[in-house]
Length: 159
Image 1: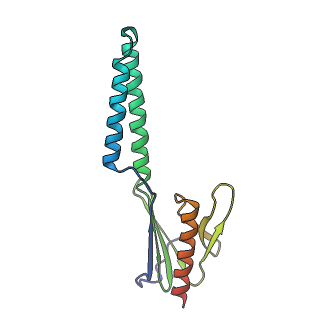
Image 2: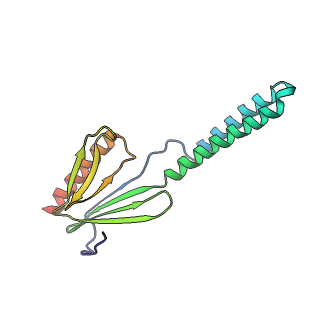
Image 3: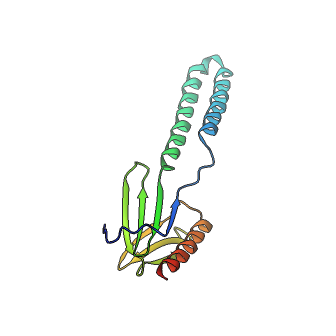
């Protein structure tokens, strides 16, 4: 549901995204080391098994490259929480670049932290039967910290 009740600028804004410790240069270096190691293995293989080893090493390298590319694509997602005097907006950008916006009333929205088996410290914004989960890609400690920060910002916005 998308409402446009208020165009007031946000008082607080949180932008969250998945952490990736391996940057572009690190990925290139890792793929280079893997390529060299696989080439060494293929070249040291017995003559009768040379071509099957080359094909196997090529498929292995392709699978690793595909996994790293998929990981980079998944890291493109982000969430932005804007807390204003009247409206809380959550802008979610998925890995494919699609943007979804959900709005809640600042005075009625509540932060719910649940401790279920699937996701520890799941942070959810809820209001009148509508809800949205935030930061599912974060660690449990980061989600707990996010919930505390949003609660504090909501308290400041309400007063």
